[in-house]
Length: 254
Length: 254
Image (cartoon, helix red, strand yellow):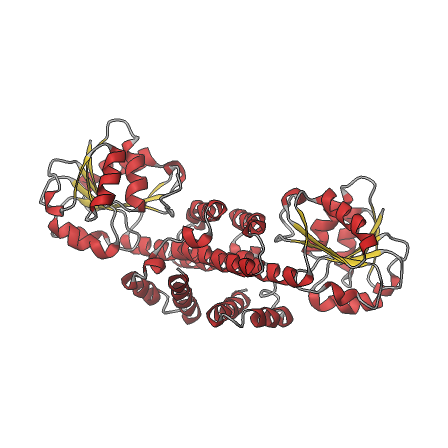
């Protein structure tokens, strides 16, 4: 099976390396508008690359579009017509973004956060798939199951809710970590102190729904501590507002 | 060494059970204003209990006050004068809350989240200690080191910053998980899908500062996705506001 990788960012990199490790699959081309990025990924995958989407090969079996949402439709429009299965990897774009450009299309959405510098095994990553034509379902499912032990069919509409939940669980959580690190850095305290707390908070949620696992001053609405903390954050009104609204939200949702 | 446990909540329970497992230490009494709670903990520790702080024994070597901040000073005031070392476990109360009631006092603050239903090993929990008199430092440090491999001296002022950071890293993070679970529940999607993402986000921060680990639509300030998500949250204006402010905060702090 021949695969073309359309994109060279974090998702394209991690996913294409995982695919390249599968037997019987050949990645034959990488497309990226940024030559340096295209070249780096193509070298890792041992294939050629193009920076012009109209130069994308026509003979591949699968075209994997791992692009920023804003770029997706423009690039789809420029790819030469072909008979491969076109898949995107976005959480928030509907499958129908492909409609009118090809008849064979679907979605392969990995629910994970990818950073360039960090290796990650695909086996444990939930993959959410969606397919336009029945005839293509086997091919998509087979590819997904070879990558991950957790494959699930999901509509575009439910996928966008999943993506919204993921923004909370990952992006917002990580930012909350960043704010905590900032508070420690101001006092010259090591961010390492927080790791056992961060780990236990993440582990606890496997066992208990997060609402039941809640601890701290906000759930008791301990105004004494809350007001002291708001005072300590007076030099950063945005973070102060976040503290107040998060505390109120914890208290309301109990 | 004889220890009295003043309190019966999550911290009192987990800490007293860890102390009771140490050789040569006897927990001789539990105090709690709520008889049922006092009784349950006293039974687990195989000791007696009181619900009136004026009945707390005078012969112990260590008095461990693990109480809500609001209750701490009132209870301290009611405890009969004695010659033991008085310690509290609060992140946000200054050590000086003991001043005037005894000369032997200090702090033993475990940086962790405790839930009744979840066992936890104290060995990996960072313990932050502070001591009023030089002469008591060995006793406190010895006790702390027998409980945990990570013991650190810290002033009351730095401790309150650490506690503020912990509210972010744990309480706010957990609430963000709860909001993500709520979004999934509305669509009938399992919260289990999020675990690999939650785990990877927590693990990644061990390697990379959170600011560098940030991914998702907010860091790119992808207004198209952000606006779609805000629209999806229209039925919960509080959560919608949190989404907007967290996204702005991510974008600003880059």
